[in-house]
Image (cartoon, rainbow, N blue to C red; front, side, top):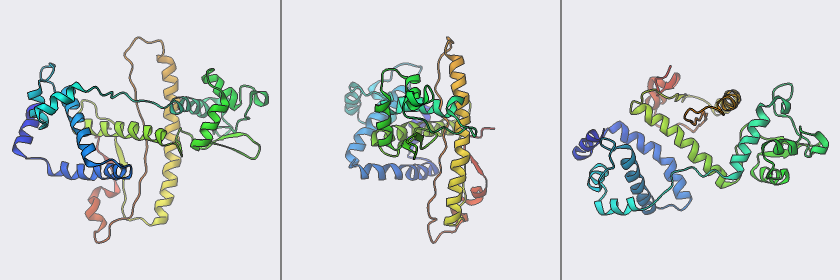
Length: 303
């Protein structure tokens, strides 16, 4: 792989299709950065560090640590910058906000434990205090996951984030079947980084020819009315949540069974997304997506 990369860079024979894809992929990120005051010089320095980190960890020859000269050749970054960047310590470990960590566990329990579900397998509205509902209350739900934090603290945070609300009977109701904060920038940024990293990592692995392709599929149409797009958004959310809840229920059961195992641990992510935008005028729909517009996109080639 490293020899291939050397040849590509030195001959400037970059894949045109890849460059077009990268320009398209990066546009939303540039929009986000500009909206948050992140300038190109800052991004350039950030990218230098990432290039060095990835090259050093993923493109070693014979499993041996790379020299500054090798990294410079591989990345195109000057050796003086390589030496400086390698001396900096950066953590690539996810920092999970407490509200996300605890919230995810609580909602997983609320949406999968039969005690907290109604006849339609939907999360029940819960009395606020144990004196009103015993274990089947919001206070009881929190206590079943953590005895170190008061339910009032969790509830105030959920109301702030838009995760829960009170109904007319003063019961606590879940706004969503997954921990998706409507407010709270740090919490939303966590999911932004987590979900997009895993999606991009799966697609990259498939493109580079990973040993076992990851599921990475989509359905795209581009001749739809505004009303049809809205209806499809509703169907997508409904069907998508069914899939998420089914995977969540199975994963919780597997996690319990695997708790005593000595085998190496793994993490997984299963996600869904939906996006729509107006088609650019002056171009026919067929020119944009061609024949694949009416068939599932299977980038992973997984069965």
